[in-house]
Image (cartoon, rainbow, N blue to C red; front, side):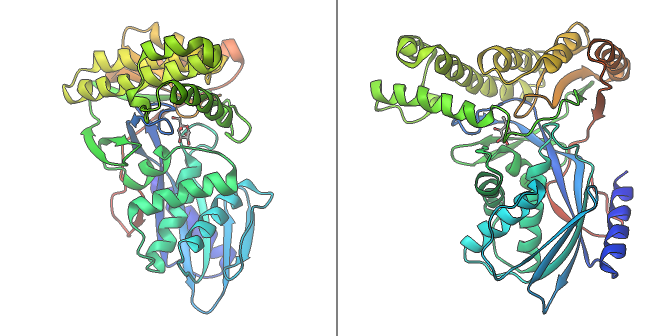
Length: 395
Ligand code: GLA
């Protein structure tokens, strides 16, 4: 499958630019085990890069000031002049790339011309962070080919800035970090305040991670993502007024929230309550993971879903259905919506030898209930963004 992706992206490059690409780069999507909507709320998250990639075929244009992209899956191209200041345009996929370029210019870095064809097997709008892969993939390419001396952390931050400034989504840092720092068979526990991170084994004996894609597409520009950030700001403001010494959500307790409930109103209260509980759950989840306790991890994931659905209100009927139905199966230890929400995928911790049977059952029920054919992804946990050299293993 990946070699097909690489070969087809190379072939597109050859036919569009009438020459051979000189470099191939792969940027992965991500899953997140637990820690949802807390990356912008002082929390910890547990993401991992997966073996679904955007492949970039690239050639440097030594004496040119033009950067040209060809988005193979859309059949669209876009060029811009690297000596000019960029601003957002009408095509969303272009904005991710221009945003990266702009952020790199802001860091005072100089690049040259490029030709790039890219193609993706990360489903778009499915909560697997195809946009972070696009942003960070491009930042990584510029860094490598023009020796910009950006650290991996800076690459992730450039990707996030592009999302904020050119795509209009006030995302956290989780997706970009996972795409850049992924490690084979490891999940990372990322402290979203300090950006320190540690890796843990992703493998739980006899269990696997299975994704059910509801095929309900979302974009966080129009979903409630930015609104959730506003609700939280309101709650934080109330906390700050009463407890000026509190600077971080980690210091907030459920008791404090109960006390401030009337001041902040029910909506902000429920949003903040979710965050405070989710921050605790991630700590417990890391313990469960390191003690190889899949039952406990599964239970925490399911609790997260209840919070996302009822307190944070970022799920949808289709995903609630997928989670509920999955949990009726004894061999599913935990299930929850994953990523920003409002559609996309659920992530399920499933007994390995039952995964195929259960996927079939749920697929059938989902089709009956919603008339939609869901996709099932069995994923491998993979390396972060890298340049691909011929014949190497890429998982
Ligand atoms: C999206 C954002 C992330 C994160 C998740 C929810 O994927 O890009 O920063 O907030 O939603 O956990």
